[in-house]
Image 1: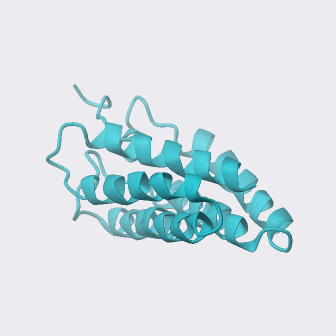
Image 2: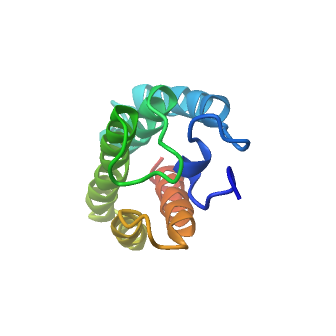
Length: 146
C-alpha cells in the first residue's frame, strides 16, 4: 500500500500520505542543534552526538528519500543516505566514546551500529523497525549523556 512503508525515512518520501519530513525533522534538527551549541563547552562529546543527529535530520528536510528509500536512487536519495551515514555512523562512534566514561552507553552504541548495518538492506521487511530502534538508542544515549 503506497505511503505505508516501514522505515521512518521512507515515510518522509516525496508526496506520500504519511509524509512528515518538514513537520517532524525541522523542529527536531533545530532543537538538537540548539542542544549541541548549549552543551559544547560543558559536554563536548554529548554535543557531538546532538550535532550528528541534527545533521541527519536537518539534511533529511531538504533531501527527502525516494519512496522505499532505496540504496541507489535520485540525487536527493544519495544526499539523504550520506546524511543518514553521518547520523548513524557518527552516532555509533560518539556513543562508543561516551561509553568510555559511562559503560551504560556501550550497549546503545552496539544497538545503533547493528541498526546502521541492517538499514543498509532495503529488502529487509523489518528495516523500519531497525531504524526506529537505532534512533531510539541515539536519543536515549543523548539523554543519558547530558
